[in-house]
Image (cartoon, rainbow over all chains, first blue to last red; front, side, top):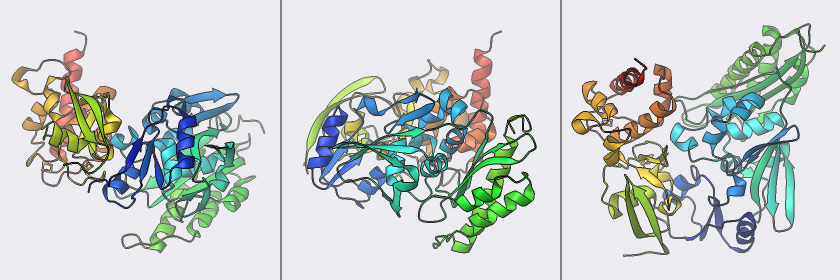
Amino acid sequence: MKPPAFSYHDPATLAEAVALVATLDNARVLSGGQSLMPMLNMRYVLPDHLIDLRRISELAHIRQSGGDIEIGGMTRQRDIEYSDLIAAKLPLLHEAIHWVGHRQTRNRGTIGGSLCHLDPAAEMVATVVAFDATLIAQGPSGVREIAASDWTLGYMTPSLAPDEILTGVRFTPWPDGHGAAFVEFARRHGDFAIASAAAMLTADGAGRITRAVLTIGGVGPAPVRLTEAEQGLVGQLANETAFAAAARHAAAIEAIGDALVPAEYRAHLAGVMAKRALAKAWSRIDGKGKLAA
Amino acid sequence: MSWGESRTITLTVNGTSYTREVEVRFHLADVLRHELGLTGTHLGCEHGVCGACTVLINGRSARSCLMLAVQADGAEITTIEGIADIDGPHAGGLHPLQEAFREFHGLQCGFCTPGMLTTLIELLRDNPAPTEEEVRIAISGNLCRCTGYQGIVDAALATAKNLREATAPA
Ligand code: FES
Ligand code: FES
């Protein structure tokens, strides 16, 4: 239960960090350490080099740029949780972050670390997918922008080259007054979700859904957007029947099963979570009926 | 005996500054316990599951098994050994939360207690009037294998109430 020997690097600038990832063999990038440290302690990973990003202050920020909000990769989950800007502009992210691990791990864990670790149940991954956010990576040849839909290449495999570092994420907020909800089910608060759902909705004056997003996490090998369910919702009157129809798409995801949670149960929960997230998001739309038709 | 690369770091723990040469691969809990002799911080799992190793780093709770000691270079750390002295002098030499743990039967073997206390001290600073649910969520990352959680939750809620009353304008 002790990390193996490695060389430790703590570059002060992003340029130095990129130079290190581009040149060192068998190197691992350390951000908040809340996933990598357990893997080091248990020696699941045996890097020759650890490149710690903690001193690179340019990577820790939450800022508005134009209408968008940019969050640096080294921003601690706790700072996102406590940000008034995020609470006001990205309510889905604000709610999702409360489900990430525990208080003690959010104090250390970063958004970039969570996105790169890419656990199937990771709330941050489900959230960037729901927003179709843009991930920003820096490599030796410059900056690369990656759509959230292209980020996951496979189970716990992000679209990040070995010589790149994820520097941040850019979110485009939904219009004021939209409804957003992130719900999940785990046996203990803070554990990895057995299933999670993220929903965002807008409506017109007649109570019809004008825009819908529905994401399910924890069920397949990576969080997924249910685009068919979303298309089915748009134009519908928001009600139990419409949400149940969308939830059937969630329950149809090919679920992962394991010793504790059989696949059928995960799939069933996906449907339940989808319905709850949609109903909650709907209940939070400001002045339904007042939004432009 | 050394197995690899080392670095000299300075930590301020419970108000005392320590400079030590440590192996870069050592996690913070081992340095607190083995290099500084502060064995009040417990290790239950060493992979971020039990919360027994929780300490305050620059005022924020963190699992000392999930960070390298070199990452804490320059940090101010509060461990269980130092909590009696924070938030002012306390009659009886214990932090009010420690007193409440005693009063409400918040511990038996005491293994989880350092992590429970450091976590709850942070919660009560951030949120002086937590609900029972908020207390339970705050300690969701801390496992207690013998006392159960009821006494711990009662102690936290009673402390919050006492501290609020003590600071309320007369
Ligand atoms: S010893 Fe650190 S969380 Fe269990
Ligand atoms: S008091 Fe024994 S584990 Fe909590």
